[in-house]
Length: 218
Ligand code: E4P
Image (cartoon, rainbow, N blue to C red; front, side, top):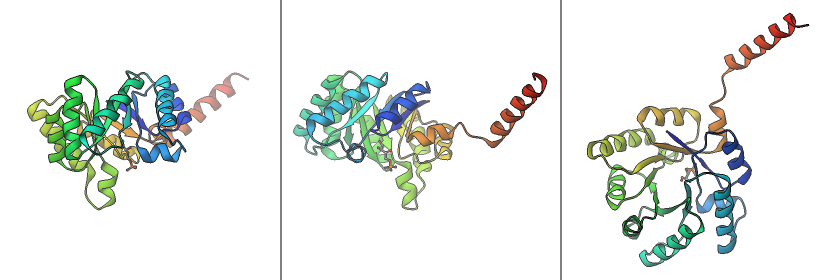
């Protein structure tokens, strides 16, 4: 299972990378705006800065929504670094662009997936990753995890090579449920990754070990 961090914050990316468990980064226009990164040149420079931290798999999202413009923009993003994965929304022109990128050997992440039909279409077009948004489905009273399980089964049935990148993962339980369901990748904020470290019995057990060592080594 791969861990991606879902942020454009360089400090968070460095912290997760230094932990030694990070396989990639996902961003989106909202996350870039949150870091105050605006303007084409600054956005490209920021993607490059992210690529310089991690080993691979940096999703960079296109803003265009029409086929020709998406392909032009995606090719430009892909030129930034070999680690770039072009992130494309699940819309008609996006599916066509994914097919073009697949033919050109440019990796893609099809984002904003909310049902199994969209997941099938993206895989047929040759997406490298698809991003079903768990948390946002939960937000509207649906069950995001059901969708992950359904896509895992469908992709297994047909041996689709597209990787299931569970997105909008909001807490450690989500992450563990995605692992149980067989998602290939999860993307989540730093606090979800570091949240995996925590158990009160680990803390109290370590405190006891250290106290006993101190007693015996006065
Ligand atoms: C995925 O690529 C998205 O950036 C992200 O996971 C969305 O998460 P949110 O629903 O918490 O904004």
